[in-house]
Length: 344
Image 1: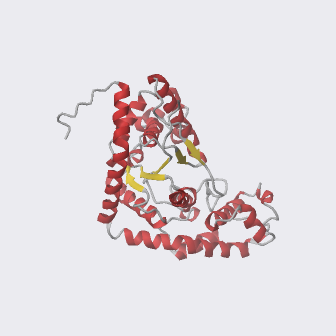
Image 2: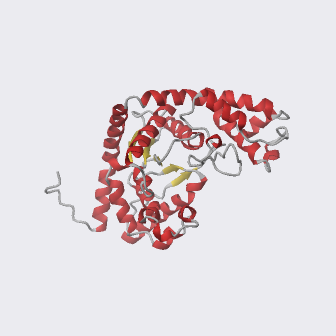
Image 3: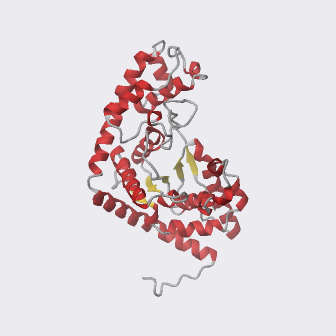
């Protein structure tokens, strides 16, 4: 009989740079909503993933705290959800090694993100960690027997690999131990595009600051970037179908839908025939009303880094309490001798 797993959501974000509107609409907003669905939620700042490319140590610490502040300011309640940074729970690295021995090298070379990050470069000069990144991601998820993972379209392939690793482990050892985790992909703006080029994803690494809204931007900066966002000369269409070949217009409508909780069809119906000179100020006001309180609260939280560290530490203890028995059973299944003598 198939094992029944407790419903549990896991997701992680790299603390390798400032979070953006894309992170908020594609992840944080949805994370907050998941707290109200009665399913256990675990959210992780994946600092081990961050160092697959070199990070300045002091900056990494700052960015990890800043990302934690963003989670809390956006509405993640550390008492209702588990919030922690990955490196505080050693089980992530331990399970990743076991999965390194289950996964095949060919699987890793087929990952499009690895291809993208090494495009035009000598891939052999990349870190081994960058190649094995998806195996660690699988460990992040399966260490908690997570049944569901909210992911963007660009992470679907990694989650499919997680499912493959779970299935291969279960098959190799004749067990039904790891769940076949389901992706959760939803929402109008799960993939927010650049404000200066609607064909490219909004990115914290884009050198043009006007291409994105940072969660640390104040109200004036948010409004200014929306006003300057690239559009086309046509009015908004009568139906959502009319946005098909208008990437810049579609992006701004998607952002409005994501921030307002309306569907794209509802936004188009409300503004059908309007010029962007009318639509942009409405979008700017909406963006400021939603995002400005988040940046203000982030700034307040960052004045007390020890409090952020305390929250992350408590979250790590709660995460480890779930992970430890799953990891121990994994070691048993794989034939490891785990004497407790002398282990603290």
